[in-house]
Length: 214
Image 1: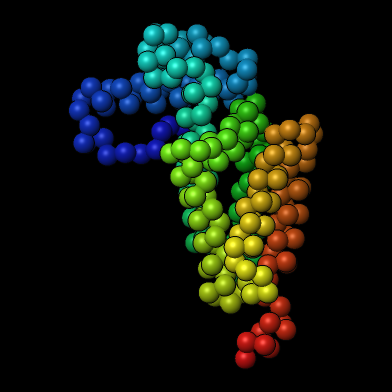
Image 2: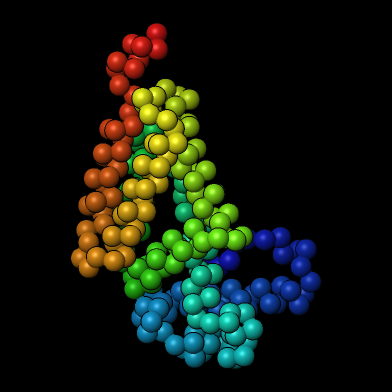
């Protein structure tokens, strides 16, 4: 896992070198967090794995928590890519909802030590004030686009405002992640698939709505 892509051709050699070192630290940290968890991983171990000096690490990240925040930002970018991929799936909006939550289930069921630490930080990164609030806006827009597509194609209910449906879809995702990161032995895969079934049924356009629209 590395930082989001950027046009490296526009960077100076020194800037490219700095980006390469930063990405090497991130990738080493992800491997170690996956294996040992965030709390058990020492900065010294990350430096050894990334082959960088302590001073170099702290030039990039003031503290280990800042490194986790960077990884969380990358995770949010990957989540946005997943939501965009969901919009491209064939079938109904219900099928797309089931596809998204199946991806959530498969990712969570890998259950490495990093994931639970990461999810909590993802929520913080996505909804804190300042420039990072852009993450929350982008995520809300991405979930809203799935609903909007369904309304446009006529297979999503119009009995409730699209904003309400977006809140329910986004809220289900966050509820799953919150419970999984805080409740031991939480069956996240089972609950993700159940949430998908519920949302697909609840958001589907009913026959009486079709009759009314004629």
